Structures are given as C-alpha cells and as structure tokens.
Image 1 (cartoon, rainbow, N blue to C red):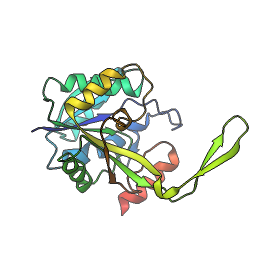
Image 2 (image 1 turned 30 degrees about the vertical axis):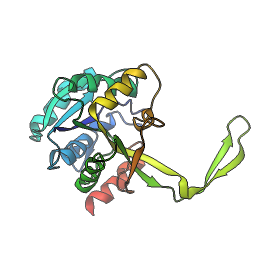
Image 3 (image 1 turned 90 degrees about the vertical axis):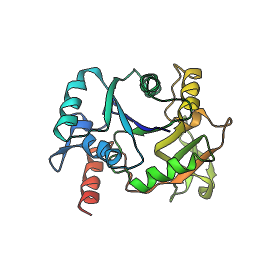
Image 4 (image 1 turned 180 degrees about the vertical axis):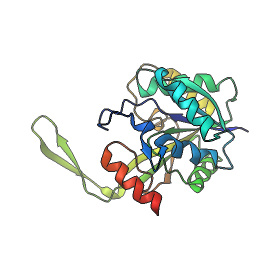
Length: 227
C-alpha cells in the first residue's frame, strides 16, 4: 500500500499583502513551502509527495526542491481555477501511481507545521474509515448571523463545533470518485464530499497547525519555529 501527500501550492495570496507570494515568502531564510514539504519529507509513513502549483511558479518550486534535497517530491501538477479543480488535477496525476486502496493525504501548503504523529494518526484511522480530517474544537462561542442585517439569529453548541484543518486522509479511489462527481463545484474542503456517504473520522489537530493567511500569521509562525 502506497501513501502519498498531495500538497496545494496554488493559492492567490490575496490577503497576504506582499510582493512575494506567500508560498515563497522567506521565514528564517527559507521559503514557507519548504517547511510544509519538509514535514512530509521527514514522515516515515509517507512514500511520495505531489505538489500542485500555478504554472508560472513551477520552475521556482523545482529550484526549491533541488536546493533543499526534497527527494520524496515525485512531481508537480499545474493547478486549476479553483481549489476543487487543483485537487482534481492532482488526483488525476496520482492515478498513474496509486491504486484505489492506496492512501492520499490532501494538505494546504500554507499550513507549514505538520507533526509526524498527526500524519500517522490520520493514516491509522483509515484502518476503519474511508476518510479522516484534522480538526480542532472551538474555544469561542459560535453565532449564526443574518448577513443581510448583521443580526445574530442563533448560537451553536461549541462542544459540537470543530474548526477543520488539513491534512485530510482518504482512500485514493473513493476521494477521486467523489471529485469526479463534484467536478466544477465550489468545494473548499475535501472531507465534505464524503459527508453523508461515509463517516469521516475527526483527528485532533492543534493551534500550531496555523494556516498562513496574513503577515500577522508569519509573526506567529516565527514564534512557533523558535519553540
């Protein structure tokens, strides 16, 4: 059984407000995506990595792979116009090397600090589940809001509310078929494609699995790296 990571590097960085796309922004003299890829490079239970990038950045990504000897990267796929399309493009390329029962972990490249024990827990959960997602319980009360009038219309039980993170793990055949069914839809999360069809295992994440969206997140990442 093969276990691959599919890492998405094709985001637009619209909220990052930097001339440098966030995936290449230097953190302690290394590009952000170095830390993301290295997390899976060092994981013993990951056999290979496929990256999804905008076409204009592929040569820059290749330079990073060579410079930092990221040997588990087996290819780079051109991303699409949406997250769903980018994942689907990656899954199509992986179909050349993965069979239906193999495992794929789908991950946002903007979440650089993935612990190996989390990767192992996600893979282990597929002994009994077809899909698993990293998630963290909400510390705040979550309100439902009427966005037209900006009025609170209800409150959710925070004991039942979790914030979805990545990586997410799936049997390859099932997640590829799900993406084929939802091709062209505006899907921002892969686990939701299986909701109602298969139970999705929740694997606890943590606050260190921060998604880099703004420059403030970079400051927090630097603190985490120092620790």
